[in-house]
Length: 119
Length: 119
DNA sequence: TGCATATATAAGTATATGCTTATATACTAT
DNA sequence: ATAGTATATAAGCATATACTTATATATGCA
Image 1: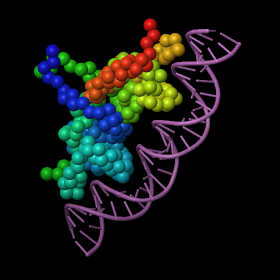
Image 2 (image 1 turned 120 degrees about the horizontal axis):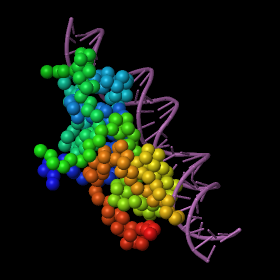
Image 3 (image 1 turned 90 degrees about the horizontal axis):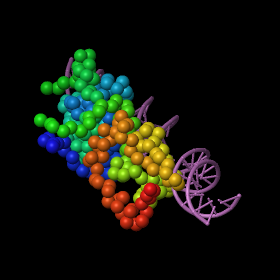
Image 4 (image 1 turned 135 degrees about the vertical axis):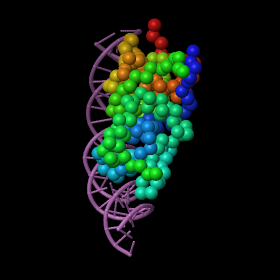
């Protein structure tokens, strides 16, 4: 007997393959796992991945192009977060649940004073 | 409260990305979804995907190389099936649960007399 | 206005990918 | 043995991918 159930929205194989292809990259998969915890901005990813800014931007653009993430500008910064109403989100959430928690990465960033906060 | 829970084995992001990259191809994703239903042999995939035999073999080899599928020769045929003891299998199973059922494809193949059976 | 910071985009390049055709291997049946 | 069927592998090729460097755009602040 199952009392609580994860959303098991069905999506077409083609659509799923497109998503998995995008997530089949260590950088993008980690990005999405991080954004599942909290919204992030480009410079935070640059710091976390020790990667060039254009490279980070290009990864984020791919995620945005399929609608899996949405962006919101706040001052100088553009924050990205997971679009939880995307048709493929339930599948994405399922697979993220099999990955290690990424919270420590954000904590470490905060401790180094590199977490961007705009209130 | 949750009484029954899916296996939520955690695997490293790098390992997960490797798997998702493999499954981020419509052909291979469908193959795995089909094999989740029942073991299949190469010529069945050739028929189902209307694809060249070498192409099918190459896709299966990639899946085999990471250990996600295992093969077993029976006479002329080599049957492939999902390796349910693979560390990434729980994640794979999770995401497959968001795909449409592929049973009809195998049924149709059977009705056309093209299902390989060796007993 | 002018400069610094944050981000996006463009163009170039090396490598990866998925197909193709041709050929090799393995098993079955005559 | 020989032919037929099933599968694997190799080599070639067109396209996709992920980075790089250079440059453009947008915001904040003095």
